[in-house]
Amino acid sequence: MPIVEKSLVTVDRSDRLEMEGIDVSGDWNTFLRSRVQTDLDVRILDWVRSQPQGDTISRCWQCGTCTAGCCLHTDYGLNEFNPRYFIYLAQVGYEEELRKYATTIWRCVSCNKCVERCPKGVKVEEVIHTIGSYLEFTGGAPESPADRFDRAYTENLLRRGVLDEASLFRTYERLEGRTMPAGEMLKMGFQLLRSGRLRTGPLAHRTRGWRQFGNVLREKLKEDERRRRASLSAAGGRGGHSP
Amino acid sequence: MSAGVSRGPTDSVPAYYPGCSLDGLGKAYEVTAQQVLRRLGLSLDRIVDYNCCGATEVKNLSQDVSVALPARNLALARSMGRHQVVAACNGCVYSLARANDAVREPATRGRINATLEEGGAPTYDGEASVQHVLEFIHTRAGPERVRAAVRRPLTGLTVAPYYGCLYTRPKRYTGAGRTPGADDPEHPHFLDELLEACGAKVLTDFSAKTICCGGGHALSDLDVAVAFSASILNEARRAGADLVATICPLGQINIENHLDRIRAAYGEEVLRPVVYFTQLMSLAFGASVAEARLRDNFSRPDLFLRSRGFA
Ligand code: SF4
Ligand code: SF4
Image (tube, rainbow over all chains, first blue to last red; front, side, top):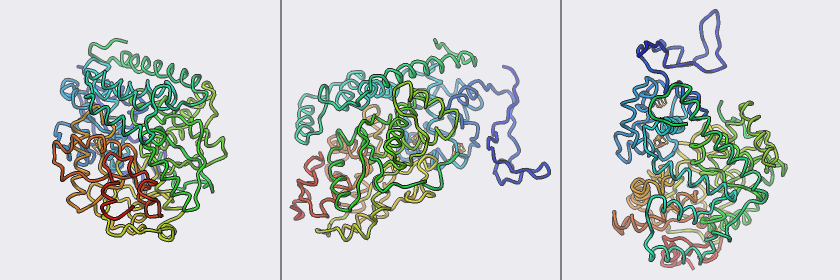
């Protein structure tokens, strides 16, 4: 492995205030000696940072505030779900260790408490999802239930512009190989019909003039996935990923 | 980098973004929100050809698609001449505000506008601010006008106010805590004040106020979704609440969809009726249990409220 020297905490603010060569802007970074570590593999960090959802990863100074409040870690008690640690592993490039969490990282419920509280303005939740994408794209993680849901959801809304909730439910449950007991289905359907809330199939709401916009977005979606995977192989990401 | 400190221009009649939930499973929320607004002399102008905001799902697949979806709605609001968009779903508030944050960067805005144009939609100048309908009612009418509109105070009802996760979070997107008319991100209180004005006893220290319901993974991670929904109900039980009031269709639907599982795992005594806050307000403003659509909810608040003498 090549010896790489890299500062982990970067200052990316535009409003630095320097006087006679001294930063007096009051940014906490100015009190920190830049952390320089050697023997890093920065390929994961560089890829995550190159994604718009992951661009804030290098602000992280490992305080652990995100993990302390994370509802999965603290309330649900899933100790191995540790956003601070996931970020650390991505920063220093310990891919082997990161892969141990490939079947855990997708469980982030997007509550955004971490983003709210991060003192450094890291979009933790989006960074965590980006690290998850890295693992998925490099073959380090199987497609997770959350990935399947994200895709089913997106396909569903792109069809008419708005969600057909009942059809999303049916499609997703089929993807997971589950079937709702007929009794439960009837009970729910009856209650929804009674209140006029069940609008599915031909009755579903649709956005006027959606076809053109939907087609453009469908193309964008494919293009983005291609670009993300391609940038991974360009960055030299390892693992058996295919473009 | 951060959401604006000032809200920018306000409209006397802001645009209203219903979102898929309010036109679907959250119909009771939509209907009663309109009742409440009408009684308070407030109005909103519906964005007719709106599209789904993409919630928290689409951004995991593509940044540009996840920004273009809400941006199309914000652009429609701007072409209606509005500077303000009000939404009733926490997920919608989140993704609309997130799009605003993204298009603040000129390069992103250029790319998104090219996509909007290509798709036949108006372009977006980034000038529409986003507010939750709870914040809208609180800033425009406030507890005083709500109190004056009450015909049948909710005396004797103890309510746990449940705000959920994305109502104010993250402040980077919503501007919470430092924007006029936005609630506090760690200790939201607008709902407490409005329901108190309706005569209810509100548990202002309800510990599950801003926890996540697990709704984003309502189907994909059942264990978590059921555990989080159950802990909201269980905290409400511990605090002595009769009812839980929600401000988010995702939270409402997630909790109510898992009632059978919660009952099986934690017992009948954990269960509480769960209602949209506008259903309670509508009831306090004189609507009947049926008019406030309280029969729609799976948790059957209608039965409970009738037993407490509300017709
Ligand atoms: S709260 Fe922010 S700075 Fe602290 S460990 Fe988490 S991401 Fe890093
Ligand atoms: S958004 Fe995800 S990582 Fe952040 S606190 Fe919530 S569950 Fe934890």
